[in-house]
Amino acid sequence: MQSAPGHTRHTEQIEAHGLPALRLRASGSEALVYLHGAHVTSFSTAEHGELLWTSAHSHYAAGKAIRGGVPLCFPWFGAHAARKDLPAHGFARTTSFVFDGSEERGDSVVAQLTLVSSPETRGAFPHDFVARYQVSVGRELKLSFEVENTGADMLAYEVALHTYLAVSDVRQVVLEGLSGASYDDKVSGQSGVLQTDEKLRFAGETDRVYTSTARVTVSDPERRRRLIVDKTASATTVVWNPWVDKARRMADFGDDEWPQMVCVEAANAGSHRIQLPTAARHGTTTIISAETT
Ligand code: TA6
Image (cartoon, protein in one colour):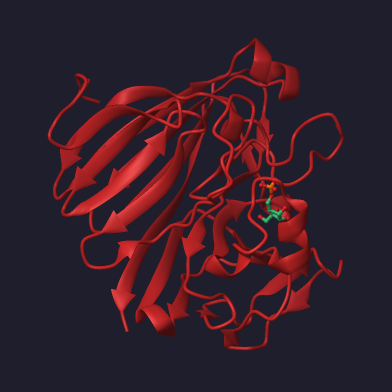
């Protein structure tokens, strides 16, 4: 990757909320990426404006996850299976990545950020790895998280690109693409539930882990747009909205913010966790875009 000096036509190295970040621009689109967690917090296009949601109450501090945008959940999803002392969703989202540079590719700009295993990471995850994250900004936002096993043993991990989509009112949107898929419902505790409805509407706290490789769309009539979440090499799709009570219980989430977002996450979790032999690599990709309706 071509090393980028401070500023180029497409990449600006800045400080935001006291943290080092990148502003990436191409094709009339713009994204903000923090080195902290390699966290994309904003992606806007000339035609549709902002596609991602970030809380006005988010933390921006070492050891804290940013609330909104696209948190990187790695190397486990949700609660750690064995150790209660470890944070939910792994350590990637609270660890600083290294910016390796950026370059133009066609009508997009692609930045690479890297996380290499260290004594700190091995304390929570006893494996050697290199995680490379490519953030491609153009008419769509393409995020590719690749893990390479640089150790001598098999490496198993979970990953989620935990995308928070911006919507006008989650009670008015329609999610499509998961009909016929089965899911584990983290609200009711039921597992293996079959999604029979073509159109998913939200009427309460929703926290579902689907087995699906399909494209998902979220139609937002008030904004006359459809948000599109495509993905590759991802067998799990997570759909989440905290609704009233859970929103109130989260310090970094405003009590009245829950109608403004819905998470549609490209993941590999649970029975779909990735098993990576020595020297092997696996990449999970999500592509966020919008179209007018
Ligand atoms: O992806 C959905 C989920 O796993 C929910 O269970 C909910 O807890 C959400 O993630 C947010 O998790 P966080 O650790 O960021 O508060």
